[in-house]
Amino acid sequence: MIETKLSWKERFTFSTELDNHTFMLDVDKENGGDDRGPRPKGLVLSALAACTGMDVVSILDKMKFKNYNFDLKVTADTEETHPKVFKDVELSYIFEGDLKPDSVKKAISLSKDKYCAVSAMLQKAVDIKVKIFLNGVEI
Image (cartoon, rainbow, N blue to C red):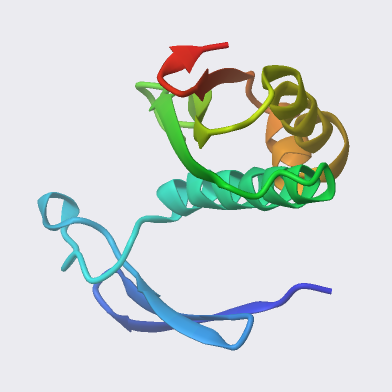
C-alpha cells in the first residue's frame, strides 16, 4: 500500500508527506499561490520520468553497462479547457557513453511495456511518445 498525507497550510500550500519525506506543494504566484513547491501535474511527469528512469538504469545494469550518463526530459501539452488534462506527453531519453543502441531500446521498451507502473497508468489516458538519443544522435 502507498500512502501520502497532505496538510493544508494556507492559500494553496500543502505540506506533503510521502515515503518518510516531507515537501511542499503549491501554485505559482500568477495563479494565487506563493510558489513554495512544485505543482501536482508536474509531479506526475516527474513520477513518470523517475519510474521509467529507475527501470532503465536497472535493466542496463543487468546488461552489464556501467560507464554512461543518462538524462530524461519529459514534456507535455495540456488541453485548453478544464480539467486541462495532458494531451501529449513526450519522453526523451538522453544517453552519453559506450552503449549499444539495441540494448538501450530494449531497456526502454521493457520499462514502457512491462515494468513502469506510472507509465502503464498514464498510457490509459494519454499517448506517450518516446525519443531516444545516444551520443547526440536520435536512434
